[in-house]
Length: 366
Image 1 (cartoon, helix red, strand yellow):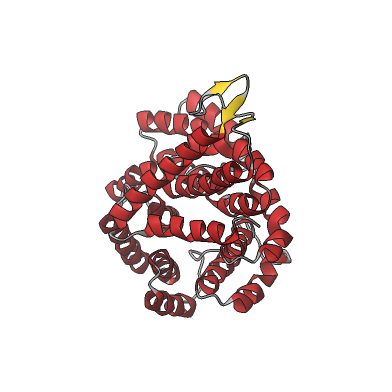
Image 2 (spheres, rainbow, N blue to C red):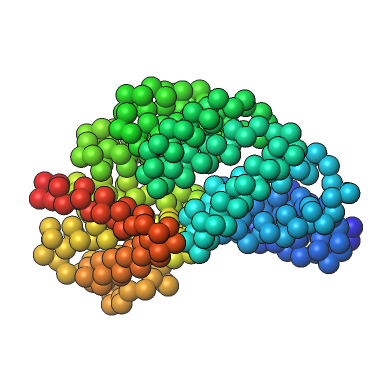
């Protein structure tokens, strides 16, 4: 190992997790590739996939994984159980996040799932996460029978070291119950998450958002208010939670658009930087509803805002036009939704917009 790579690895080890760590890892990968240092080629790519999933927009998971997989397969005589385990975790990140990129066709996603399944069998691991993801895809497509079938199979499979943590699994169980409007079961399942008994880097962060979105779209604003601040405090510093802001934007679109504008302004840079398309769709769609309500409730045509320098809006003396922001968010949301509709062969993106628009329209004027 060169002294340059060794020094960079030391910096990476001492650096805190987060977006700032990603370019350091990428440079280390470049050096490891130049040196054909297989151990670091694999370890660094595994790190990059993790950092992108927990602190970024997951795009680098998608771009990093193919070479990671090929390195494993090209060096099958030099890797063992530990490398296989790390590879399967990388597989999990890919098949979990691939759904959020309309550029990835379902044929590819399903093929990756089957490859993951085959390797789980080959390497001696449970199929628990495989069935977990099949149920998750069922939720995405609103295929109730598939959800029930695969949810049952996932729960009947044994847990092992490849399984999601208990907190993540409970949070997914909550999503399944909420899909079927089984609120009492969802709340009961979430108790150890909200008490702090079970938690991880993404839970209960995502769990609160599941309930918040459910409450807002069902018109249960009092229940939404009770968890609003708890939810936001957990996610507002981490760009990975861009897709979890829609419940907050929608709540304030209905109750207090001025507070919603503050959230929009604070997190606009996230969506401008992101390549995770479903997260962008949710932010733009909810922001469209927010700014539309601003235009309906206020006579003001423009607001003084602190927006990023690369914001795609016309600025004059710090003022931005409501109509321009609203139209931009609307156009972005509709454009991205149409691409998901095309990829999915059904109106998944459009259905999402219709759902939140119905919620807003039903409360308009309150």
